[in-house]
Length: 278
Image (cartoon, rainbow, N blue to C red):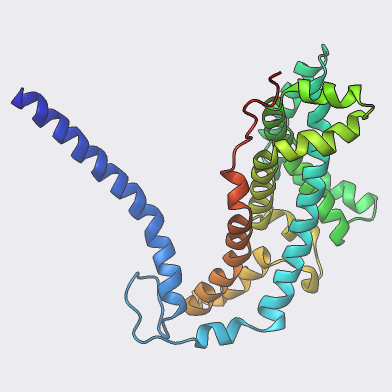
């Protein structure tokens, strides 16, 4: 019995040590960002600041460095996220509610599309955008952002939509509601957590995307923050670490605020208990 308890204790300690190591791998980079943003002599080491200062924030809080790129990011990612969620909802609804022999091939095609690396399709996309005069335009980048994120968004949206009982829609159809009305008034309100997940996931992926806007946008005034952060890496290996960390803190704020605003919907659940009884 003592040997068995010793083994369980050893396994628990090993598991705890592994979890602490994984946690440290995530915490250390975040600690460097926060500490370096307040350090007047920041470098690559994770250390206590030599003295607390806000000079790094003062240096980056200018229209050219922060405000304009952040506004461009909000326009690009916000518009593309709204377009992605709307299109994913309309595409997932027939896949969830209607049975067809084309459903499975269509879903497999979408699954294949999610596995394509973005770098593999950027050359033909760039050539296409030049032909249709969408290169160096915000609307063209928004369309490509939405198109690249749409396959996985459809998969997520369909899985959440499958959890809404079809009997609720059938009752609405009996009262004269159309399919679109039942989708907007019944299905979407009940799958609020699912819509929130798709929204957050799509926005976060687009927010951190460097390669797409770097390739499709040419005018510096249109560059989002994901691209402008590259300006902190100067020539000959010189990097303004303190300003880079301060910009990273500001750059992360919109994503954190978005998650906080819809965190209640993420954990709210569908609350469908008893909805189809009687």
